[in-house]
Length: 221
Image 1: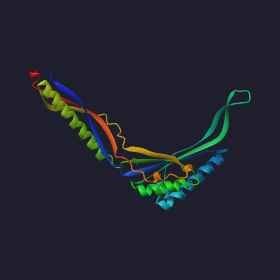
Image 2: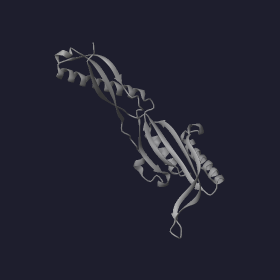
Image 3: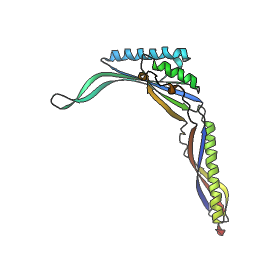
């Protein structure tokens, strides 16, 4: 005997205050030779390390997420008006990241120090949840509850009852639990006081599940 089914999508919402801060740093410049680019990249990295060490970040806690040295070119018109490619030198890029507990005072101290660093890093500040499981669980529970509420409303309107759950479908995609709230260059010289006191909103997200229920007494529909 074929089972009558009802398929309902439920949407769940969850939020929580961030508990961790990440600062992404970008060191980048162009030098005439490959050797000079390497030397300057090493010098800039050391300047960042010296800046962050007094703030509680030893070398091992300043993680490099990307490093590259590539030939750099630009296109411009020559004296005949023809567009040509000109070699500029070698561009190095070193992306770094530090993380620490959510502390607005410490964040202000770190941003101030970076603004004075001779390496002139560009940086972005992210607030995120270190332990995402609690939010993920709350999100999925809310989505299933929402699907059940909708199914009960539809069943009542149709004069039937819902039985057992036959399947729950969820795409298991990555739930975003971070937000970027600030990006700047150290060349701004940290002359804006409001940058020190960054209070992020709760990190919110939503997700969807698809639930299939058995329909009881469908003949009454």
